Length: 135
Ligand code: VL7
Image 1 (spheres, rainbow, N blue to C red):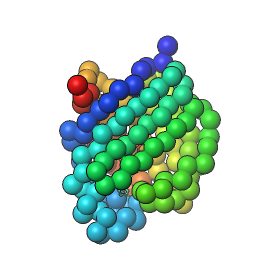
Image 2: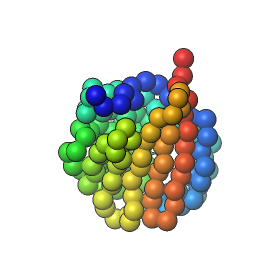
Image 3: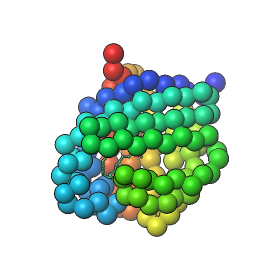
Image 4: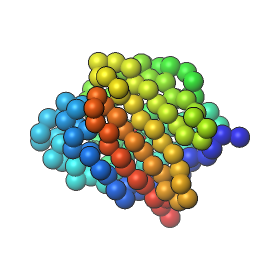
């Protein structure tokens, strides 16, 4: 039985997001707006099939994938790049590799109690976000 990430999660902390966005090549004005956002993650999971929605008042971003199946991800509304993306289980962690123009790009999710953790990597930057289960 894989871990179950289903639910709605609200951001409670966001460390090094600014430098992560610089590494992604996000322009100054967009970074100033994005840095004020408190994203919500809405995760739908059926075993190895996921839809992760990142919702904000500014933009939304949705990705759908099956564990272990590489697909072409277009990060529309984020940095608008194409990546060859694959997500795998590492025990109960979700580990995503986004192969493309940016070196060392990807993310990892894990859960601890009622917290959802997310580490986002791009080039030499790591952004660490924590979400708490809402309602
Ligand atoms: C990563 C955004 C900054 C552009 C707008 C800000 C809009 C979000 O990769 C992500 O989630 C994974 C793991 O949960 C699943 O897809 C979302 C968001 C980082 C990087 C880029 C700033 C412009 C905020 C919609």
